[in-house]
Length: 424
Ligand SMILES: Cc1ncc(COP(=O)(O)O)c(C=O)c1O
Image 1 (cartoon, rainbow, N blue to C red):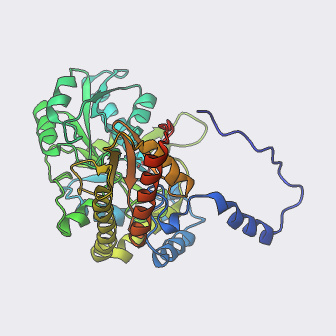
Image 2: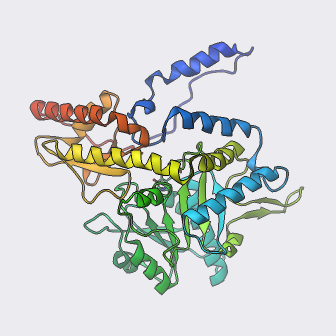
Image 3: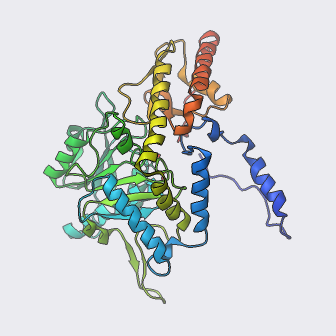
């Protein structure tokens, strides 16, 4: 894998006519994945055109402002962030005294949790250069490893149980005196299943370790799936051992991208979160998180959409999302030679594998992809990784028909496919 090469384009001498550029922007999308018609399993979280219009309007109202100036020149951005934090505290059962930051996405929220924990550990242990480790299941999102690489920490990944969940026992076995954090997923991106959070929370309390819960994918699905009657385990600040949690508003919170929440049980730790620097020719430069200039439109869209939808709106979107998920799972299970990994039903992600040696699941994925149904691939076990969004619901039958045809084609042709290393 390498960086994207340049195209050779030069800045035009004279500006290009706007009509031409607008038409080109539309035309360039021709070969992109068709997110409007259920072809894309992640990246986009499209619900319907009404929501898209409101997201666009909210974003556009703050297209010029910069969230870097929130506490200085744009008090309205401060106010919106404060409202978002309060709604987040309520949704995720944060206690009085909790603190939060608004970040650009899951990766930055995870980075902030790890950085805050590391800097606290360095301060409390009196080891300003101390190299510590973080213990996580092998299902943890690579955002953790990215943070650890930058922050000079070791990540110890532990095996999962037979239900693809990280357990307290495996985590405990991997800890030592250099461990500063346990990291668990709610749910994990590979399997869409929750780690054994109650026991991991107990372990964190018993060992006095920071527990971060990564709910970047599921944070804005789980509370609503739970009120709709789906069996969602306890995962948020209700568990006393949870020190911080991350939940992306730009996924199923339906904000425009560039919106995530990191919540800390105790706002006091945030002194280790912020960045402050004074040793230059100007005054003190301070940012609450990693980013500098930040799109205020993302804050405005999060603030507006959370209220526009309210609990009822989120429940409606979650109901469609979960129905599409469950219909897809039962449809896949009715196709001879395929099986959805069990358990399932804790959210809008599942994986399916081949049960027939004559059906190469990667060849099935190749055929689906050639027909525009972009699928994620799983290496272990070899399978198809399926994220589901609300707008998939009307396309469930089309998709199941395509899968059925692809399976038959692979079975009769003996076609073989291969795992694609670069995944999402
Ligand atoms: C569980 C989990 N954590 C972290 C991330 C990273 O989020 P982002 O792509 O917004 O940086 C994702 C993205 O899918 C995720 O599913």
